[in-house]
Length: 114
Length: 267
Image (cartoon, rainbow over all chains, first blue to last red; front, side, top):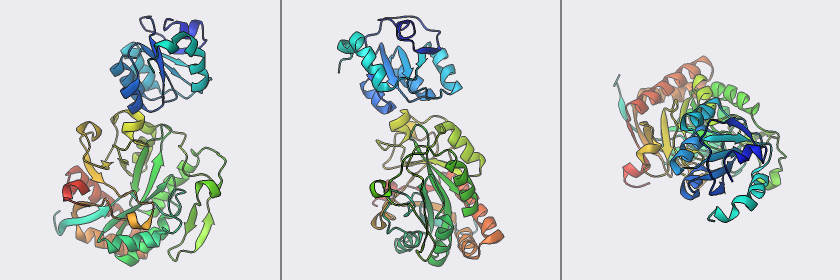
């Protein structure tokens, strides 16, 4: 599935939609960025409630293609700006991390590498 | 000014019986007494998200001959802990009031999560807090640091190298901010220090942990003595002495005139 499918097929709202569309290789679900740095894979989608500009920096470090912020957590403006500067796709949803992970698993589960 | 500057033992991270996770035995009075026993001259009380025991702490410190700072260990929305240190209990209480408005309404069972006792310096229980103080506040880390700084606090990210509740665990690295210093458990990577002075802290939750990771600070002894006298007297004298103390600590941090526990060869 493509990054753009997160909005088109799953209905997650893009708060930063300026990105080069690409194929997702898997996903990772975590709220601790130290854990994301250690365990997330490149070209994956990060499912999280950690809405902070550091999430963007860590995503860019790892090569994460998209971030889905769950539970409608408020997203600081500087996080959106950082995501725009990095060309990182940033989505928000009312669904929990459990729900998002469950919905994405049939598409991305085998590629999650975990 | 270098009138009577000397190295003094200090510790800016301590809990009392107000913190749900701390021992009920650890009253502000016992904390001050333990600190004096360990040779500390400068001590902060930093309960989770509240400063309600700071008035008793200041008076207990005056009795023990220890200079007090009134602090709060605030927990941001990202669950990053940050020490906010004030010169007087009044300032800390005012900031604590602000934080109370950011504390989520959660079901709180003292049986399971621990008691939160507000006490006086004679260890009488004045009140049991009915809100869970261990929760994350509804404010992001950057905004919390900015607000604390604006309220006059020295802002010190807590245990930056800890695997939980730290900038490194929650946010991966230290974002830029108005930090006076950072606190670490061991000598941290430069990336976690933001160019600031690095202190150690005991994070005492039980009496026997008071002073276990104290640090040394190069500070004017007369300012410490004035703060001790002020804390005993209260009122305007306490406010002025506390302000002077906080300014001296800030100035020592700016000079990086601190020796954390690992640099003291022991502790």
